[in-house]
Image (tube, rainbow, N blue to C red; front, side, top):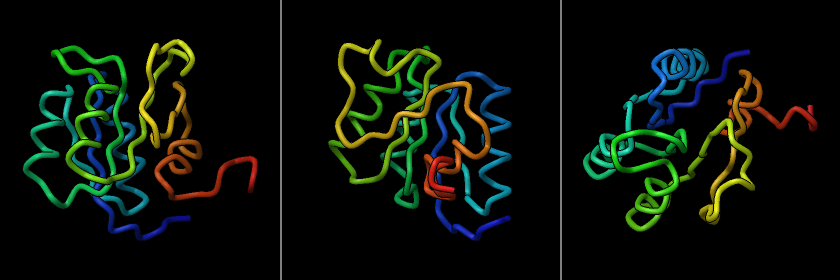
Length: 125
């Protein structure tokens, strides 16, 4: 089932395949998706594009700003929902920002959409 979301998501993911597949899934559900391949570019988008309503970012990215730092900087400037994703367990990070959703990799379509608000959690369905 496709929902019309009309929400703009900023997707920061350095793995091209993961970025493309994730963007396709989100776009199929009606989201507008802006993609970047690192935290520095994502931070620039957040600072310059007021239409972004949700940040979805990988944690482990090259380029000087990882997903956790990106989330921290985003929270200083804007109050938008943030979803961080990683193949490493959440407990492996020394610090994890408050009010941020963690989405473990690998994730499927259902888990992705639940994390961004498109579907109920699988355990609730």
